[in-house]
Image 1 (cartoon, rainbow, N blue to C red):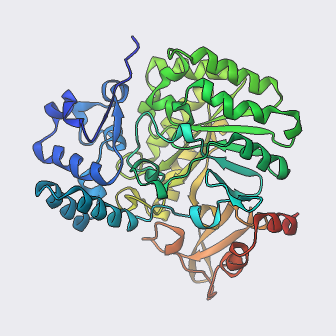
Image 2 (cartoon, rainbow, N blue to C red):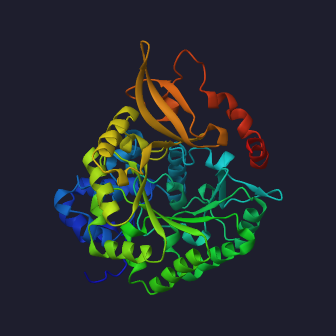
Image 3 (cartoon, helix red, strand yellow):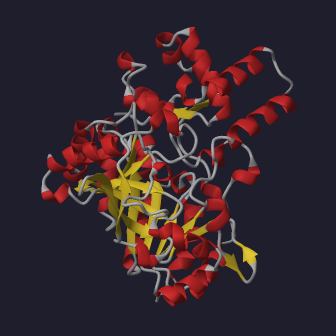
Amino acid sequence: MQQIRFKAYNIGNYLNIPQVQQYLTAEQQNSIRVVGTVLPFKVNEYVINELIDWSKVPNDPIFTLTFPQKEMLQPQHFEAVDQALKNEMPKAELKELLHHIRLELNPHPAGQMEHNVPELDGVKLTGLQHKYRETVLFFPAHGQTCHAYCTFCFRWPQFVGESEMKFAMRETELLKEYIRQHTEVSDILFTGGDPMVMSTKHLKEYIEPLLDPELSHLQTIRIGTKSLSYWPFRFTDDKDADELLRLFEKIVASGKHLAIMAHFNHYNELKTEVVKKAIERIRNTGAEIRTQSPLMRNINDNPRAWSKMWKLQVKLGCIPYYMFLARDTGAQHYFSVPLFRAWQIFKKAYQSVSGIARTARGPSMSADPGKIQVLGTAMAGDEKVFVLRFIQGRNPEWVHRPFFAKFDPEAIWLTDLQPAFGEEKFFFEQEDQFYHGHRLEDLNQLAS
């Protein structure tokens, strides 16, 4: 396949996409306009021409993954924005309306702003998150966009032009100093946005200081990216693709483990020759590719989609890693799958693959106290319960600790659950106030 020139479309020029004019009704086009005014919308020609099957639109999974749908907004929000646009509401008033709607969409779930931002010498590092003892998340300022946007993205506030909702940090020196002082940190995750939108020159500026032997406790560098799906040319044909792969080789040669945390949401994203070539080139550097995705209604909410995706990933040399659940933000009402059904999907998909693909963990909720896995259901006497456990926890002592919740077939998130066996609170809720009220440094000392 010939390289496709990178050309992106957003809410300002979406009507210039030929397929939109050809396949979508006027009502569908208007829905894109309305929803894309509230939530971020961006798509490129590779996704449009190579990944979406327009003969199946609007039911094509990649179309739903990238193009806004009317139902992604609550009816009252859709109506308000629709009327505002039709009546040409003044920009200042429209901005205020959009701001209020976005605040109702829980822009920063799981305590990201309140509890995860660390300090260095009394200064908040707003481009870092340090929720789990061993792992720091870093939001490089140059990587706070993507090649295209996922409609379910829980980091949608990064892309809607409201600076107070963003995470980003340029100061490489502060990042290095923070890690130097926190010897409990073994992993750093570059996230965004998408770090792979950066030039290799900028990525080097962030990564190379972390290869200093002084930071020997930092063992793993992770890069979270959707680029293998949305723009695999980043690793094959972009002008600095070879330089990027040499950087990967340098990281591996330094003795650190490099993990590319690839976001694939459907097996159709793995079908092109260029993505297969990109995966091969990355693996040849010594880096490994781990794959993860949320379970999303209207995109991949069936066992076959997951088992087929996992099998193809393993065939290509990738490691299935996580099945997440739709976070309690943005269009969760549109994408969410009840916990019981999510577990059934995971179980059936898991049962249909060989042991080498059973590295995937899930279904998992990235909630305020930590990553919580739904292990299944059980009967305890006359009571049916969910069996859950922490994969990761704000308090390290919670990790791998099972607990039980009353069975609720409609529950979609941790906050929908009630403790089983007559308990008033889950065990972590009893400790939660303490852990939110102390500095991470103090908690690490207590847990060690």
